[in-house]
Length: 264
Image (cartoon, rainbow, N blue to C red; front, side):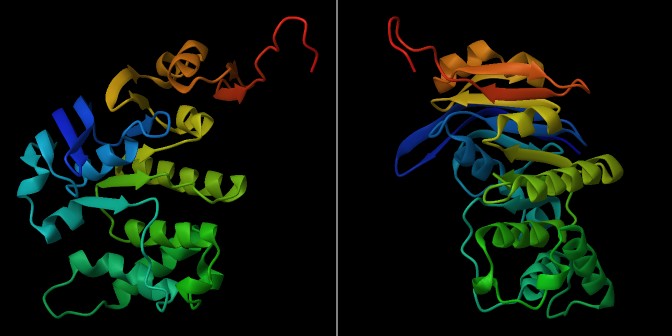
């Protein structure tokens, strides 16, 4: 299963936000889409999910995503937006169960196997103790994990995740990224995520796509794309790219040097 984009242009309100994006994402890989605010990351992800119109082609195993029925698309693609509108009256379990809908027949209700899948995902996301809580009572980070739970119980071949670590402390962020990484290695799940945290992008993704002003500025392995020069050019950031003890990249912001003659 592959996800392929060819010369994709997309936007909204009559404005083109993403231009001429082409990329092929092989089965079981992880592509991190990065870039400064307003670069078009979320727009590109929504276009991949078939939620925004555009020109060019987005193909799932050679078939245009726009040609898939809603149910067929939901069986193949799991999409988690960054700021979803949640039905506050539902419990965490009720909301997660909605992810099983694409696998049910007309008028069918979820069975024991579906509920078992939901329970397993909630446990893996550290949500088991919150299973009966209403969504409106959750913290921002807890809601983010609930959104991811609904997507994971879909058991799709592709996960499209818009800032999956937003609002999470570092421990829960690492736990979620480790779970996603385990899914792709064990089940061959293909992951595409937008990420603001460049260290996480460098450590979990196989490939990085750097967007700037809606266009591809650079693409390749994390060490090829996330360089100090690129961070200065496209983010306007001063940063060191370090190698940790186990060989993992760490993006460390540093304070710019003060003007000559001025003390900090």
